[in-house]
Image 1 (cartoon, rainbow, N blue to C red):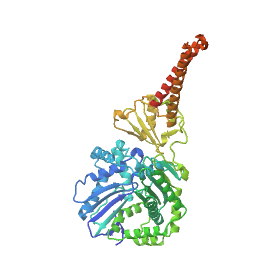
Image 2 (cartoon, one colour; image 1 turned 180 degrees about the vertical axis):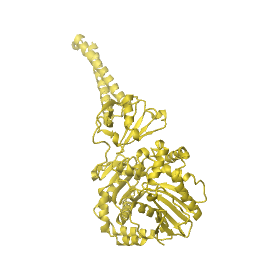
Image 3 (cartoon, one colour; image 1 turned 60 degrees about the vertical axis):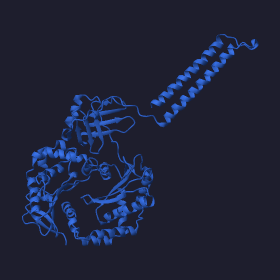
Image 4 (cartoon, rainbow, N blue to C red; image 1 turned 45 degrees about the vertical axis):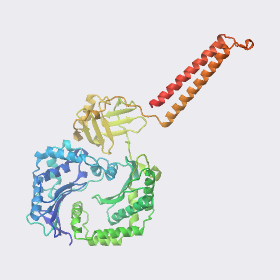
Length: 568
């Protein structure tokens, strides 16, 4: 049983004989990476509209929107498959746009249950707010997508030349008619970059360690991911016991490159040990110290996975995607031969390539410069020149609005700049607030309650960003900044200790001064020995007054220092 190639109504088709219920799908070369952030969600919205008309059936059907492909698939009887796929094509020709608002709401509800993971964080930092970084963002463009936008999108991407059919069953149904508009095969997008160099790192919000690198697609890279997982598992879990979940993966990108990603969580208070152990494993791979036994185990697992009656059926969606991106369609025999020929020497170049393009996520509060990773950029290289508007909350922060963009200037820090022509999206709230996200994923919040930007200046910003502006629903009043000064930041522990010590010393000296003044008063007042009496004159009275004044002054200083320490 092998995958056979044919054609149905001008659409390339892949077929494999299968004795069970028929399984079929129609895959298009379009996905989230083809969108813009201002239009994020348009492919998913089109998918939902296409599937709406099928309602409830006795068989399973669904759609999926990935980074570079969108697929409609079903399992059932031949007549059901024909009705489903013909119906998909019909819906693409005449979208049920009366369902637009309802499906928009459905997608918002679906978005609320979405949880981003380590892979999405790595993608956002690597690619920014474009191409393969877009899946890391919410579907921000949903509010602005119009009926015309959807029509143009479907006519551009969901075409005969940009589709592939796959079927597992007794035959390809003769009644299947793939009526699709004419178009062209769309290449995958060229990857964007938000990094200035690699290997790089960024500090995560959690306690885990994550890593990815870009390598040439191939059997050696796939096998290396398996070897890396075994090495990380052995070092971080079996030997050190500092991690529980350890994993590595291999994911072709569609442009001849692939992403190798790895992840390790951390037991409490062992974050530094996990980070160090993770980097030690990478260094071992860089040095070419790859265990032959690990490669043999990975090869054996891969061969085991290629046995069974459903293997070729399971490969169909991936083979359809490969066909659409122009990758070679390999048979199982070809894959087995490549696997058996792999040696440890074949994996070392993959390790060097992965490490040279690496991006590392460290646990919260940890850096990786000591290991040769450069910080991923948190700031812009050049500031925006223009009018400055100082924050009402913090006088050290100003927003800058110029003819070419918006910037943020924070005293003691490099600038953040979003030129208008590099703004991926501008989220516009009814209260006047704006959130700008640049192609590099840097963000500036332009809040009129915080920054006294005149209405005419804000209007100029809105006009420049109109092509990427997405209207937002009203915010909860508690989410709108009041413009009141922010509480002062807590002083460093060293300053707090200094205030405590200074206050205690001042109070002690006050007590000493009070005791000395009291003793001096007693000496002056003591007339028991006339021969040793101290005369009560202006000098002795002045000494006494100065002593008491000094005691009171030191007491006041001590109280003030201690009160300041308690307020910080």
